[in-house]
Image 1 (cartoon, rainbow, N blue to C red):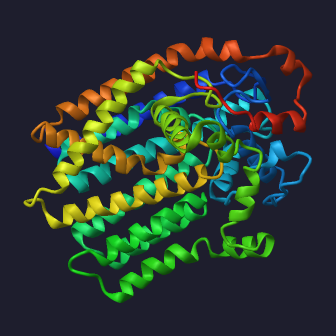
Image 2: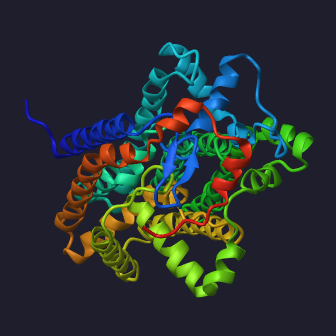
Length: 457
């Protein structure tokens, strides 16, 4: 039986999605779950958890739903703040995760065996997101080869695989943002009808019920609808807009009643009140030193891959090579964008992806203007747009061939494999068995840890 080129590309995308599932499951198996220790590159500070950032608190939210106690209310003055500082988050992921927990037999998230079972949900969600990268890139580039290149870049990016191997609402947010962008692209290229507009609106609404960062989808959604040719009817536009707003409306009303604003922005800020302040770094290193040497370099490296609580890094030379290729790919993307012969609809898709990416970046910069949080994972909602840009830009420089995107993807796969090879020994160095035997670290000590000014490794 002969397989068409289109079918081969589809099978390739499925294989890449499955490879991401396996890779993220391997990261999940090598990352400690609720294990106490010390952060060696942060002054050997004691930490009640050295594994995936914020995983413990996300799991605690799931436990609350498993216990039938309803949604938590965030209290920045709670004596157990370390355990509950994710309580301000919207509910979509936690509802899904609590259902998954019941399905796989998890009743107590603190049990060691619960970790891998809960993490597998993120692995599955991550695989769905990676397949969405293929749909977006195929629509954006009209090239099966470049779409597969983009999918491989996302699938084998070490940080995304590690993130999708943890208990977190980020995986669901990233997948929803990816599929939203894919539907935006299809609307621009193929036209908006009622079904596509409703589908996109519902996805955006669920993303808003997953994490506040999804607000970054609203303006790109409007651009994708209003810039499409032919322009859809106002009924179709209204249907998509209403769907995106009605889905999270009940949660926004709840937040307004509890916190005074629909997005719980103040509560979100209070949750990070114990983190290192940007002004402290600026006073010590200057404005340029803070934004370039700290936020810039930490974010760039951790976008490729930094593990544990931003405490395990790869060799600097490896980061430099990968980041240099990223810069070349972005240069190629801009060069291709200004080609006069390119299809106007394709340019509109690029603009939509760029607008979304800029909003995600703007939120990240605004956050770091107040707190030092130079973590590349906060940029991951735009990973599909980034991977598509990489494949498009490197493909343009390679005269339409997928050789350069493929080389980047395999370089990232090799980096992921290398990361997996060093993580067991690196985590073992950080495990503090005395802390683990004591069973806890005081709230005051934890707040102090979250205020630590990390030193570059």
